[in-house]
Length: 192
Image (cartoon, rainbow, N blue to C red; front, side, top):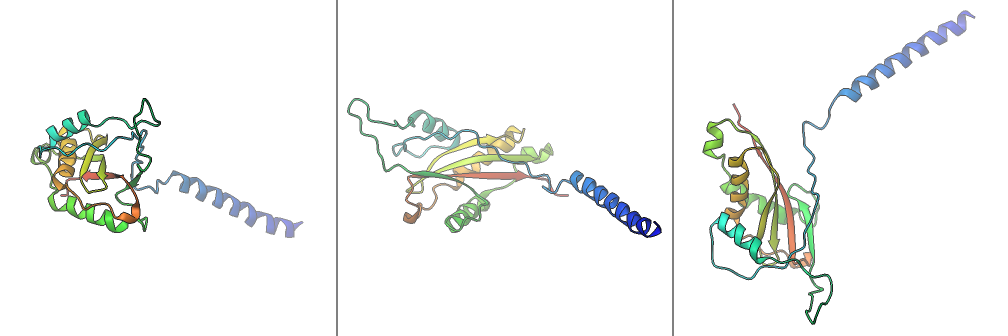
């Protein structure tokens, strides 16, 4: 009987310690405060015709007016381009197919990205998520705000930086894409 107790107590203590460790480990957030990006909708659009050079806010507004949805089938003699292909990728992706091109996009953006002075003075911080749409020839088809930081200055700056970095290099032919959508997160944080 003493032998059973000698074995039973260490097993009970071990189980209690393991249960405690699992409970504590479940309370630790290992995501390091990373907010997941939920892209809820994707709209397919025809490429816009070349237009005269316009500043970012007007360009975005005119681009929205000129872009029409692609028709999914032939209607009344209208030919739909079956060669239209697009893909969506995160700017931080390590997908070997896109990593070199994404590095070039990121480099162009980082060259001109600065903290907006008004937001800095107000100590505004946040993460802005923007979807960048690039046509096969490297032209910016649009920059869409997906997730706001809560600050108009930060949101406008992120979209403005994308327009300022355009045009980009043409998409590599190996992609065989008409348009590439890149989801980019702009993390505005004031360092002390």
